[in-house]
Figure 1 (cartoon, rainbow, N blue to C red):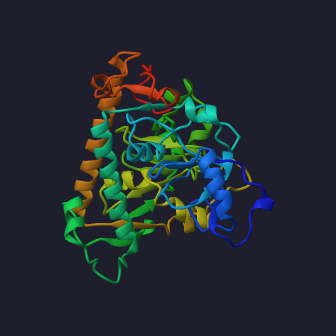
Figure 2 (cartoon, helix red, strand yellow):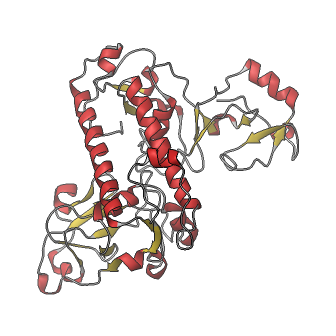
Figure 3 (tube, rainbow, N blue to C red):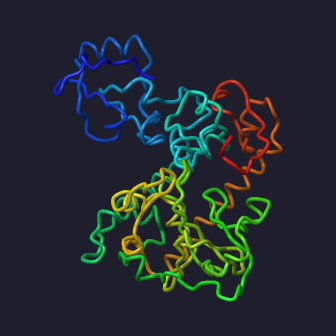
Length: 384
């Protein structure tokens, strides 16, 4: 982290932008002198171009890639990892987008400390594969940004040849639809106790049986007639927020059977859209900005509040059905490949630091970068 800057050392105008966690990734509202910047940059830790800066306070885990410009950052509130060549920054940036930091799940503390970062486990493929993964998702992000800049309902995007090569099944037939136009809200209650299996919606595990999640039934049998019926392929929004689901998770019922869920959940049934495409849409953070703008954290700090009629106005960018299927198939293949590498990590040799074992998906703790590999007991999870 950078050296501490005190308020009296800043001004509203100046030579060098000074970023705090509130302005991190946006426009600065404070500046420091060039003399102070040059002194602190030469004497104290300072990021290298390409390093991934992390917000450790406020919106924790928010990241910005350091472009190498002359700018300074607020000491312990904005940090970065000083690692060796066995970790690629583009891959690290991808990892930060899905990471579950060690020791903060379920915590009310909205801050990342050094131990949270350094004790978090990361599954590492070989360096060349890290770079390919980073490049792939960078290109995908660029494509998504391109779509966001288009007026979906009013114009045809002008797509360059390079973008077509990045995304070979790209077509220019994307449009923007409201969630209410492609799904129906489920209001059917479990009258007569047609179904007795209760589901729950977990940010980490998706929709699973309540008995499997809690090891016993939570809901009382007599109350199940007021629960919503959830069929296979239905989607469910859980308003409970956590560090891994900052506005609450939306998951798809892939259990292959029908169950019931509490009326505290929002259940909706898709139509005229590929359900795998829609599932991956809700796995990304694209829709979070809509939720944050239109909702709030509610009376309880652990629940997100948004009215149903507003929720179903959520905009969904949609290509034609063939492209939806191809996108879903591609991302499913990537998920399967990642899971395969994570499972290989379980068999990796502990304490080995050579590239041969890195290519097997060795799991390393962040504090061990540059020292040794670390055998992970549960290779199918990113959290510690």
